[in-house]
Amino acid sequence: MTVRLEKLTSNGWEHDSNHSDLHCATTHAKELIGQEMSTYRLLRDDRVMLSLITSKGVMWVNADLEVKGKALVHA
Image (cartoon, rainbow, N blue to C red; front, side, top):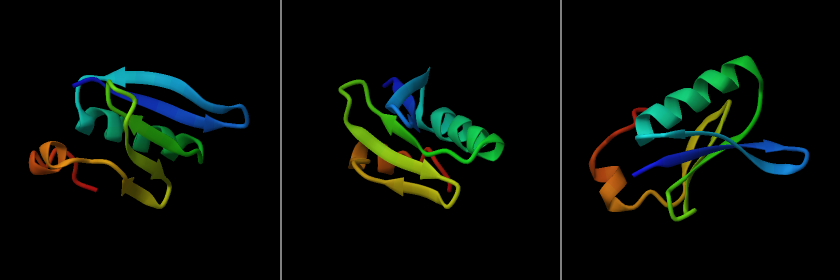
C-alpha cells in the first residue's frame, strides 16, 4: 500500500509526498508539523482518507482492520 501525504493550505489540500507504509508517512507528517503548524492527512492508493494529523495528535478516520491490526503507528 502506498500512503499519500497531503497538507492543508489556503488553496485546499496539496500533495506533499508518497510513502511505502503508514508508519513512515505518519512520522514524516509529525516531523513537518514540528517545523510548521499545519494540518496533514494520509490517504490510501484509492484516495480513502486514513487519518488527520495535527499538532494535537493523530485522528484515525478510515483505518480499517487491515491497517489497525498491523499496529504500524504508535501515537
